[in-house]
Length: 167
Image 1 (cartoon, rainbow, N blue to C red):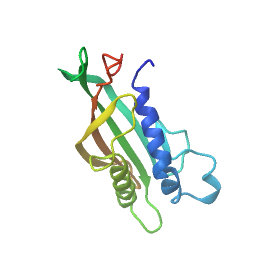
Image 2 (tube, one colour; image 1 turned 180 degrees about the horizontal axis):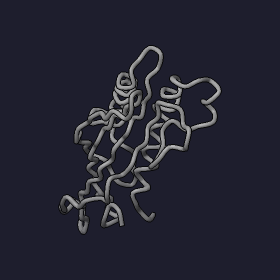
Image 3 (cartoon, rainbow, N blue to C red; image 1 turned 180 degrees about the vertical axis):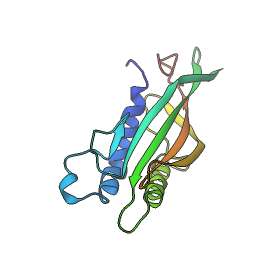
Image 4 (cartoon, rainbow, N blue to C red; image 1 turned 90 degrees about the vertical axis):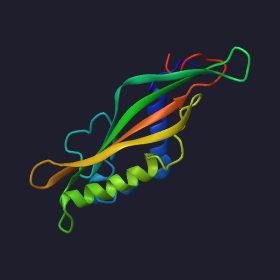
């Protein structure tokens, strides 16, 4: 199978479904908007997407971290990393500030994708460690806030039938 960073997209999509993240986020939305928009987006959200919503993006390309020889003859392991940011966009509600809503969504994203979560399924490779590269919030206007979570995913491409993680 040809490999690429789309394996992360598949792993993220599976995790979003398994954790029911769309339903968690859409619980903040008016009923009439819940079937018209996606709450967890790749790269960008559609115009007029209700708040809150999450956009994730891969930052740059995978970085080769090192090599080692495996226990099987001829097996070479390659270790790579890929940085991904999750941006939690929120607006103030009648009862909560934008920052409070963004923080609630960010906390849930951290539970699902952060260092304490199960490794992402990016078969045939293995996400063996997730490193928290920090999180922060940015005020965007009077009633909007974005909370950013930035993680680095370390990948072991030790599948003996392949040489590199992302050929």
